[in-house]
Image 1 (cartoon, rainbow, N blue to C red):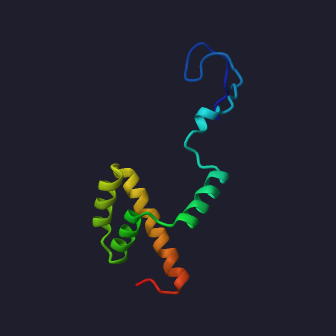
Image 2 (image 1 turned 120 degrees about the vertical axis):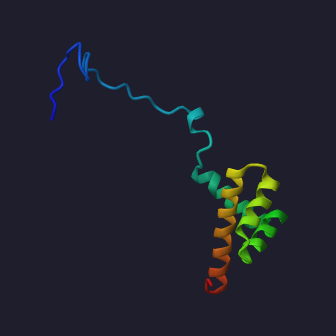
Image 3 (image 1 turned 60 degrees about the horizontal axis):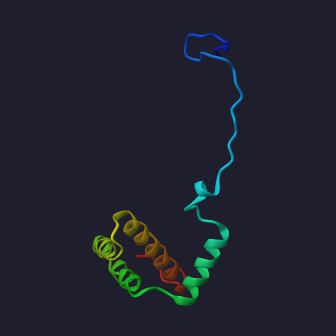
Amino acid sequence: MVVQYELSVGLKKGHKVTKNVKRKRPSQMKGRLTKHVKFVRDIVREVCGLAPYEKRTIELLRVSRDKKALKYLKQRIGCHKRAKRKRDEMQNILTAMRKAHGHGHK
């Protein structure tokens, strides 16, 4: 273990100082999913159901057309990353539906 000295040369040069702890600003929390937002989105999903393109995606995933589903979502959403995230979300919904109906996975 290396002892730290207040030297003007070397790897740990300079005076010993305590780190200034900065608190996060609201602008830095942008995009973070909160409990309330998740709750509201779950209720909206439960009441409104799935969009038509989401239903078609689930049908494609049901017949194991994952790549086709990704291409379809990319065309609809317009972004590759968001399409991958949406495909995973639809896959989770599909597995939850299968589990709820009592069907075994292949």
